[in-house]
Image (cartoon, rainbow, N blue to C red):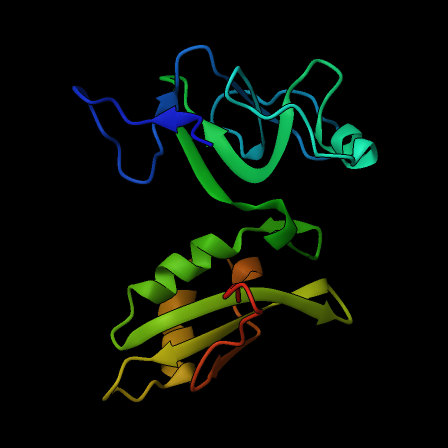
Length: 184
């Protein structure tokens, strides 16, 4: 269901999904403590309103897991809320990579890979790492007629991100692996 919208007449901000719809409340909470964050901090997006479903059919345990006592639904999306009320989604909590105690949002690295010439598709994932818990791995598919140099691409994006976010490896594949629903 829809919980935000960019204003019809007004400022649309790149990368933002807009303001909460009327009668919809959104809060961003710390993933570990569930305490509401201050404006601009990344955390779990929780939503409450008349358009939010009331629970999972015949699944009271799952409903209890994903709803707060005060009625907010835990979306599983990570985002931030600006002081001006604009919401930005930065990824899914299940996609979060924790490497050496640092939180890494795959979407940030994927957007940098999208900017590289010849990249058709990409995915950034966390894989087990003996020293850091998880390591960051990138997987690319080239556009038809392009040959991708994984070392050159890694070097190009490493100049633009913090060291702890840098790719441990970058693979070029003929296609991305997908499940039956088409998800990578």
